Amino acid sequence: MDVYEGDLVPDFELPDQTGAKRSLRTLLDDGPVVLFFYPAAMTPGCTREACHFRDIGADYATAGVQRVGISRDTVARQKQFADRHSFDYPLLSDVDGEIARLFGVMRGGVFGRFGVKRWTFVIGKDARIVKVIHSETNMKIHADEALRALTG
Image 1 (spheres, rainbow, N blue to C red):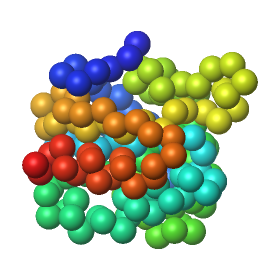
Image 2: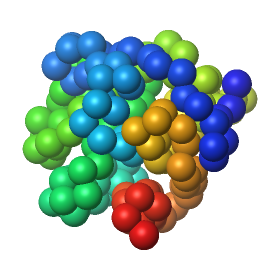
Image 3: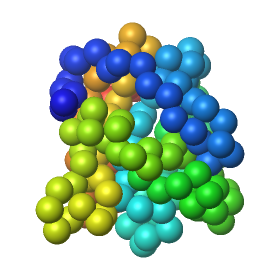
Image 4: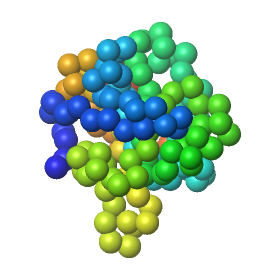
């Protein structure tokens, strides 16, 4: 299944980098969610992308928007990534790729070893997709465009 702008996202639950279970519904209680899929923790591109989400965190907080990263990395790998770069937002572990498949971002074929495509989904408080952003090479576009989609 793929999700598109305007679609309602079903609730899901995954562990974060501490092993705590996080559900989309609970995250949305605190405001809109920007869910960004990244191929692999601690790789150069994913580090640049995740650090940019961290670096503009004050802008996200002012807008009342939650940042959430997600990849197929293990909880331990997500914790190592979060600790190394002082991320102040959850990194969800989707090891079996169930949520990546739900969003239509699983890589196939020879690229399957890279886990997921670098796509970002802006999810409103009503659990509907506001905007979908994808770029494999522009690491800053995800955080910047996602915030702009919610703040104008």
